[in-house]
Length: 187
Image 1 (cartoon, helix red, strand yellow):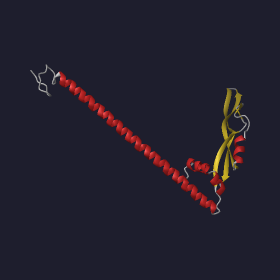
Image 2 (cartoon, rainbow, N blue to C red):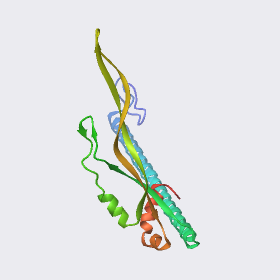
Image 3 (cartoon, rainbow, N blue to C red):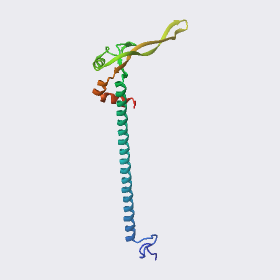
Image 4 (cartoon, one colour):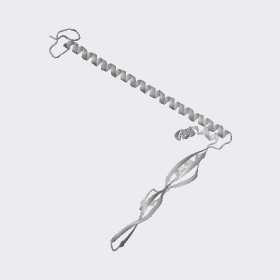
């Protein structure tokens, strides 16, 4: 009769281990699997902590770069240079395209508010839509249509806005300037 490869006790046919050793082997295998899971979880947590540390360091470096840029801009303004920030604002206009109203009215509410905090309009760029025009006629062969060009219609306007930043406005609205610098990656 065959013997258990682990303890030497007699085993049945077609098996290498006795019942007790089979159970022990299974428990050891489950323990190894659990150790592997714990090791993988510890590795995952270590990677997550390292990534969080890296993100925190990048955010700190970004804040520092923005602060340095604002400090440099303050020096420029103190030296007498003019400083402007620029933005765009899209406003739909009261327009009809193919017998459909594109927008209701021309609302300047947002622009009024921006004007009160120092923004001024320095340019306007229209946004248009091209519509293929078609000419139709009828002759002996029946109706004929042919291209007649492209018609355009103004759907809205992009307003180019400018705001001058003085030393006082930089100090009073440094968060606005910091957001502007961060948003446009100007550091």
